[in-house]
Image 1: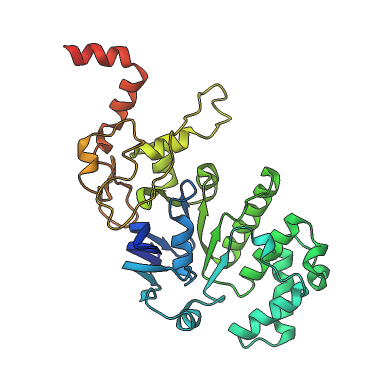
Image 2: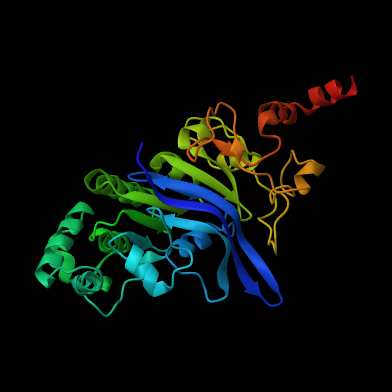
Length: 348
């Protein structure tokens, strides 16, 4: 088993909001290993993008890491200045693909000139060496190398997305942080983009932190995953663990909210409400107001990530869930499907 590449441990991130501190992430923990694709999934506003920005030093001015650690290749980086962080995890170590990345290319510069600028800032490549490498990346993402001299407006939306991927990858980073990288793309283009990612992983052994609201994309593309709600990690494990045996009500309901071609007649789940805005220390389960199985104890403390059913060892890659009723979920789900039977049993 490879060594940890990125370790996020008990990370709490807050934003100053007037006289209060809005908590965007609370005690979040997960680990990514070399060559691993890790998905971070949840609804908008759950803290996914905030965690991504904290890893690359990109929090807004009113945001700060209140507690916890971020380790990259064993080195703590959460307290480094932006210039110090760039020295440690610049483009040649961690590459960032932001939301709406099609709009993040400088429209006034040719694509090749932007690649040369990145290479000059982070490597000792000559211009010729940088362009040779960039042409290779264009080939990997399916764009003719002759197009490196074009301006962004000369590309279609899908080609702009692939050009961003080429810019992010041509220095062969160890980790890609991709924040909703397929937003606004149709499903055919999404599939093509992830084929490019798979080719890059095969050729470069690159890892990825994939941020998305679409749990189906994570199931299809990642090795392991974490599900977030209201700033908390609700569940983490292999995609197989979470798909086949979800141990948190939010994971179950989020999965059931997406259509499955194998079950075309299945009723899709509707998760009422929205993730809460939380301030200060979070000492309760943030899903309790929306959870059909919540009890009073859910409001009396933030449940820790603990071993889920079937897990054998308490490691950073074990299947874990933050729910005090995780071992009861199958029974609770059956009861909710048959409320009359449940009522009869309760009356006995």
